[in-house]
Length: 235
Image 1: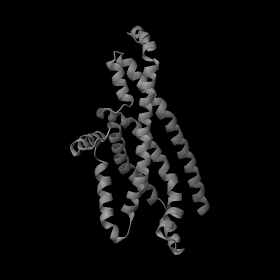
Image 2: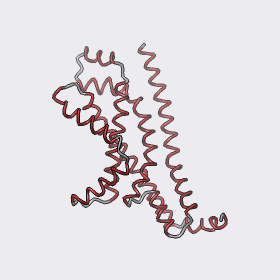
Image 3: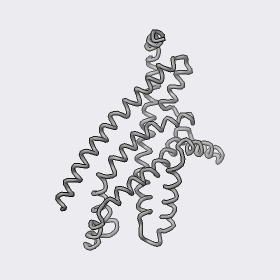
Image 4: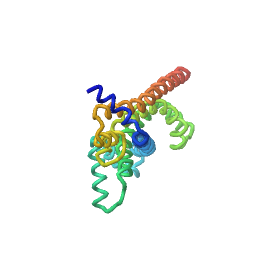
């Protein structure tokens, strides 16, 4: 068996197959990156709406709360299939990749919103009160006081979620998206050993995820040190 797999290696790593795997790896990384970037932007807006004290924004606050609570409890595959078949029913001619981008963004927005909310609430109330005493507007208080102190708390878990979400994008293969898992299925269908194909894909997932995980750990350590230094100076 091992001799058979070893004999397949030169045939597997032809130019065409390598290009196929490279495209699939780029798609996998792109789905996670776009999802997290959109999630960070939209999640921040949802969090601001949810934390608002204005009565006029109560309907928006309620909608933000419902969106976050509901979408965090729906599996990614269910969301993906809902958008996939829903687009067909409504007559939209979206490609599977476009559906996957929308689905990842919708799911990540809900999860990242909770991370952002936790980070913003970690800022001491005395800091916000000091900004109010200095007649800062709501936006000035957010951009100049709250966000700079919350950012070191928000970024590491967002980065960790980004790395974890890379694995979840494998479910996009169920909609026909050419990512790493789908590429493995294609190569296995072409007659290559499943053990060799999926071992290769496993290695590619590791090559993508491990450097990002190390970078996230470095950022967490560096930002955590800077945050503690500022805390000591404030005290």
